[in-house]
Image 1: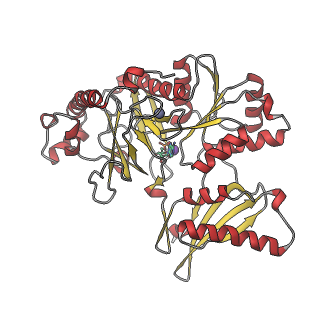
Image 2 (image 1 turned 90 degrees about the vertical axis):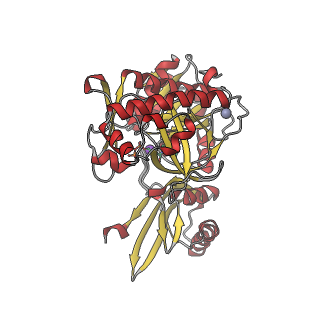
Image 3 (image 1 turned 45 degrees about the horizontal axis):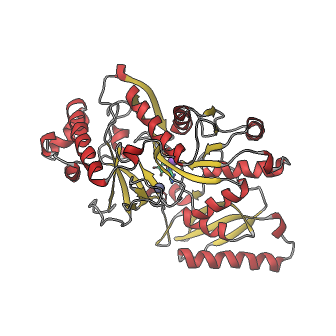
Length: 433
Ligand code: ADP
Ligand code: K
Ligand code: ZN
């Protein structure tokens, strides 16, 4: 099933025409209604008249997170506040949060794109979906919520937390879909297994997981633990929230809804567009957003784009898995390390639980690199030799994947903190210096 076949399966030439019309319109809107963008464009010596087609997008200035901070809270709004009907903000682990405002139309587009995702996962109005993303300023909860209502499904607005109750109601209400972070899905799975309720008594079939990077190995883990199909949903507050893209039944890339959010991949250093299909930083331009248009917004997410038509019939461009945010990349003894690489290795090895914590520090001018990981109860042993062999096994595998030998600390099952939202996988004590 396809929610909006005309758009999702539009041929590329027509899509580019549509994007061209919309780009011109959004640039006009931003230029005339947002002093921030007008100033930026004037500094580059361009006006909306320089934009003829989507190819001209490269003439436009980039926007970065710092621009949102510098203009906190409402400096980037391009409509009067009377037109803004909703605010959201991202967690903003450092400094001021990022605030975004939506008009009525922006909200309806958001629920349209989430509806496309949910339909691609096979959900319909006959299904109920438990939304276990946090509700509130975070876009996850209300974003997924709007999409479920739009397809006519039954929303179970749980928000995150209260894990025992989540399990109980998921069971009693017969939720077919679960929308939450992959980390929380893992925690919910663990809780179901220890609850003693047989998995067969749950109607769960579909996971809509996102808001943080996750790996193919994590997908396999969640699918087998919950007996579901686990699909990716991608988004970020600055662009609208979850639903900027979603996977289809092929599970072979995340379709981006490029009639609303135009994606580019640029080299994060030179900021030049990369060759088609190459990896780089994902950049979005919102083609229809009224409240707070984003022009060439640098996401910091590293991925690549796939332009071939998908087996599912959709032509909408696909994005490969996100390796991580460039901000999350650790440089340890000169080697680039992504938490997702560590996750992937841990999930390959059956002796370990899929929970881990990376601890980095600097001792005597040298970086230390520790990975704490839980060993499965069945694999735990009092015999030193066995534990040492296990440590060696995982350390060697890390060495071959990352190119760096970590110090492995095996910890007791359930000792690493579980996450109900975005998991925190890294403690970098070097930053405290
Ligand atoms: P914050 O920046 O505070 O985390 P957001 O909720 O806006 O706030 O986070 C958006 C970011 O989350 C994205 O830029 C991306 O790094 C990450 N993200 C969201 N969905 C996914 C996904 N499906 N896969 C990988 N990363 C994701
Ligand atoms: K996120
Ligand atoms: Zn597809």
